[in-house]
Length: 399
Image (tube, rainbow, N blue to C red; front, side):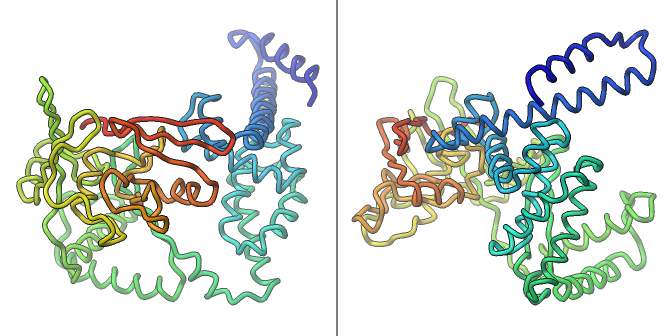
């Protein structure tokens, strides 16, 4: 879709009076808006691809250009990469025929096939442009899942082996509800076993009486009871738990700020948090101006061991709520502790040589020749291969 066609669509949409227009006119305007949105997504893909070409850290460049988070920018970079693999579908987005979300469906499907199969899946997706234009992104995603199943049949890969390779378990906190969520996928054989264990636990716990908090809807009730049974299995069914641990971050400032971090982004009521802390092993850490003033245990291990100790992790946790890369929102508990001067080059396992990096950025540092150093106040400076620089202090933002 060229600029003249875009201007024509804009003129048509602007000319519609929402108070007097007929249903047909409003429906047509809605479709024209869809085309314009798709066209903008196509331009976004094109510009993102350009930023990927000229920037060593394209996610940061995209985030700054679009005023979005690094996580959102990473999705846009991934979308542009997928569009390059399925050029006909990418062109259809630029023409306003399909949406960027259709390309995202291809991205998700790619994760479910072996790398050697991805070009074949991309070719099949590219041939489905006409189908995508007539389907919603969710409908197109279902079609792609059937294509993934056909690929698995075509190449003779043992299906159970492939399914075992796709085993996943993700945990996250839902921003809107504050609910901690667990989402998993297991091969059918493991699934049968887990299902039997859950069913047995539900029958053992709730055969005679269900909790008063049980939903009235029968389907929701079973989901609820399974959730309680799983929690019981994990906490009482043989998983040995130690006392909870909390880092007490003390800022010696006039305001006397104190932060209690339990190592999770779950938002707990104050009373519940107080009870948890009363049972937790507390590790106070005093920080000032981005530096650790005092923390329990030895913080400098030199060359005596390669991996960071629990004392060093707690001290770093007091400084960093997230990955140390400026703008990255990955939680500290998901991070790896990285030696700024590599261990292989004589780097010491000392606090002044350690920072937390999420798995994604840890891999980037090692594979893309990022140069890292710490300036006073633990300001992290990252020199990228293209000559640009990122810098930022520890990201502990308080409670």
